[in-house]
Image (cartoon, rainbow, N blue to C red):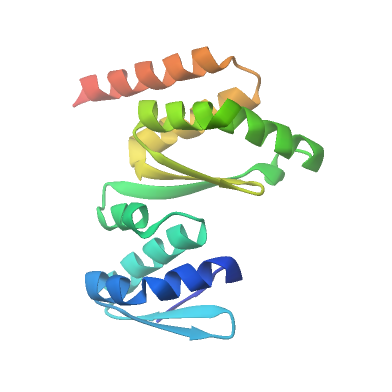
Length: 164
């Protein structure tokens, strides 16, 4: 059995999609005192935990189900772990950009999905793409101009594609 704590805001969404998740992953999900219990065989519990964690981070079910592909991962950057509280909001603004343009460009160039809430940036995608985007976000937070960051993503992905 796997036990996960998820924000109250996301419990409702999880309950609305409970049947689909249980049927897709072949698990049983129960709610107990702010916790989610997952039961199934070991692999199914593991996959269920990954999907539910993605939902807890704010992703919709379609994107969370990308984690059922073993090539994909979820990575969360806790901005408050290395930034002063007063700087977190500003850096999130740099990541999102005007009218969400920067976030959208990073998602498209990096072929990932990004969700930002409070002091966290969560990313779902192929392992190598996620690592490239994490590095790109770190570059943004260090003051690198957006255009240079987009170029970095494009060049790093092209370089990785050449390795195949």
